[in-house]
Length: 424
Ligand SMILES: Cc1cc2nc3c(=O)[nH]c(=O)nc-3n(C[C@H](O)[C@H](O)[C@H](O)COP(=O)(O)OP(=O)(O)OC[C@H]3O[C@@H](n4cnc5c(N)ncnc54)[C@H](O)[C@@H]3O)c2cc1C
Image 1 (spheres, rainbow, N blue to C red):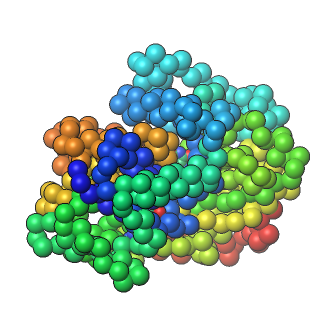
Image 2 (image 1 turned 180 degrees about the vertical axis):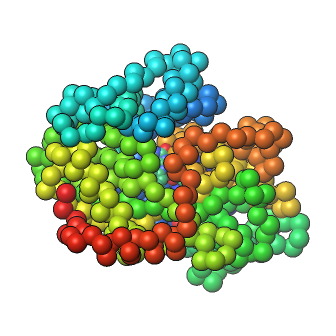
Image 3 (image 1 turned 30 degrees about the horizontal axis):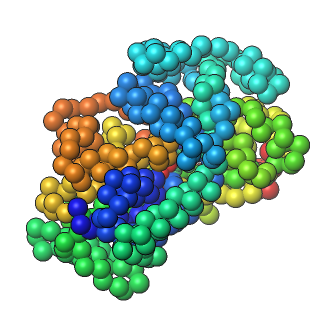
């Protein structure tokens, strides 16, 4: 492999850069990098969790977790565990997770009641009729330094291999019908690409970029749909930070995800009510919606949730609202495949809200695709088998932004004191 150009420096692009440079140090590597605060890889903290209900995904998560304990990555993570809260109709998924864990020789997780919240947080207000599970082997990643170091490594790999690190975005890909021949950058520059392998790792922007380049999308079942939600930075006092520091994270399925500060005093609650953003078209697009009524309404719900489940956060306040996106495929498996029409274009997208943990590992699958080695069928452009699994069904869009925004405006109008100050 003489020349590779990676477009995008999120989890997929950076993991590819690490693995590719390690395997082929003399391949001329160039990277086009245009980070965005809307990108899922530009976050403050992440969870490395090992609880999926299909064994293949669980096997990958176990391997990723092993790498998070390695010399390169262990400095960014702390194993603090997580309490997972399931609604009554979701309990079957814990059983499936436990079957997968047992198959891999991992300890299965005990189903318990709200006393777990008392044991871990001294909380008495968590509702009884839910199922509480302790996921003691999960860890929190201090994500900002981790991703910024990975970008630095990627830059060095470009320099060492004789390539270029472009700090711009790709506006469009130009093709001659059989190959992608050049990339037009947002700064007007043109990069010749006819003799290079291009790795397109642009996350939830994938369909927008292919549409702008007049390049065919994958079949419906494999197209990642740009799916948005809101995440709230929670400013805590020093006492609260100390209190939560080594206590577990919390994931309440289909509601809130709480992560204590990975460093400093700002924790994070992500409100899990995802949506598309269609604007009446068939393609969902990435857009900053943090000033919307929906963002405010979900903040209201976030605060109500935190008051009930984490009363120790009382007095903490919402310091930032982030509008985040990820590309979600129907099966929640990423797409890691060559474009059938353009053999020098490899698409590496579709994180589906669960691929940050794969930063240390996923690039090796991309290198396999570039080398022509077989990769799991479920990653392909057109899989041979039909797959129906979804590891995190609550992270599939439940509606479209326009409708949810209208409803949020009505709901906010009826809430007299709708937490405009954002204090928990
Ligand atoms: C709020 C939130 C919390 C999450 N928490 C977890 C978690 O705890 N654990 C977990 O395992 N997973 C988690 N995920 C999922 C995980 O973060 C994503 O699956 C993963 O980051 C996807 O990476 P990516 O490289 O596909 O996409 P991206 O992060 O979008 O990376 C693509 C990059 O390409 C850039 N780009 C876009 N268009 C262009 C262009 N035209 N030219 C050049 N560059 C471009 C983007 O700006 C971006 O920097 C979470 C996701 C979100 C949104």
